[in-house]
Length: 506
Image (cartoon, rainbow, N blue to C red; front, top):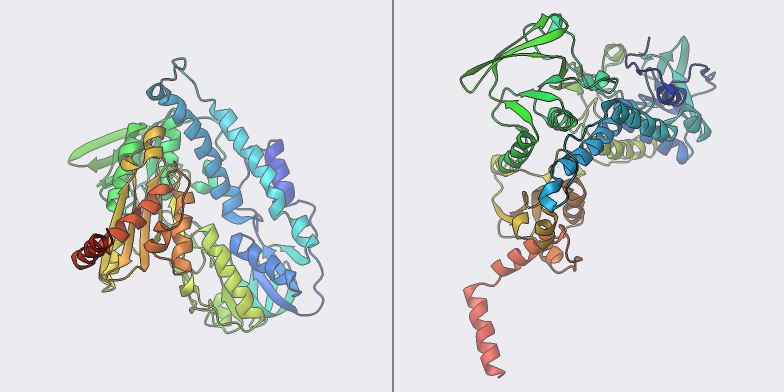
């Protein structure tokens, strides 16, 4: 099967990337004996599983039909964050006058240079996921389409690989929503966006989820006129509404034209442009854009694996069915990552892979439900979250008490001119147990880890509040929540007892 993800343009950086993640001169090994573990898919879940298993002495085969490193390295986390970092520099310059820093008017973003930098950095990171490195660490690397031929055999490129256990880690891909006219126009997804070399003068983006918002804001900062279409109200509909509203105001300030509550969306050709028609808030929009990015939905990669022949149940939209130990309906076959999980994040795939290693090789009983999984959307400002949202707590019948610290009252945020945002923490009512948290800040993705560590290790706001944080920092906002919580413990009765004691000791 040919490579589905095309590395364009074929410059020295993409050629270097290809030499690592899909070397043209690669020769598949000849299988000898049974593998302890055959892993299908070399994205985050597959790589961690294969390398971790080989590291403890297992005989491991890793099969990949496309690019080693998966979406994260090639068309996901790595290239997108390279673009976001460039966009943030442009944003800093755009608002420099607010800090008394004067820059020449008409500062221009060299988009071709931005994209070249992305390709260079991606190629520099690629050796970590290279076929040669993985082979050097004791894993047999096979290129080609894998297909189960029996409960303990997989076929790839005409060779049969016997195994004791197998892991499906084939990930997910961008899916095309049922939009009238979409099949008649040329459009980008995350799999093709990073091949651009010329900045679209006008860019349409369908879907105001994380990818849509991150790229809409970035391209607006690069100089594109961006139209972001979302069928629901506002942006980031799965996030805390107050947090999403802050990001909404920020991306609109940066130049994104938000067409939310979009209805009757239709697409068509108009010469070499895409014609976009949509109703938004009782207004009809009729826009011609140079390029269109579709960022709505992901579909699991389950086709062509022969899952039906080995009794592995799956849904083409949801993915492979697994139990809490990540075992499929075939006891010999497990799954990890985007192909079986609603948490489609690289770090979630990493830790699911660790569960699979223990459960497949050492008869472990680790459960995916025990994972505490944070996530972040890398807009400016960022939104990060862990645990339950308020509505989820209500749906589960969990009474909560919520504490909020606005960054407008945090000294470092004031000095940085970065006061839009907050830290919000939910406690189970009547206790100090953290059940969820949301942070909106320029570095929320870094800050959420403190709360995640606390949740994982049973530390509440009392413990956070009694821990010294450097001053002045934005993270001091989290400590301030500890102070808020401690003040609630000073009940009128306790306060009266303190007053009596202090009066007695005068």
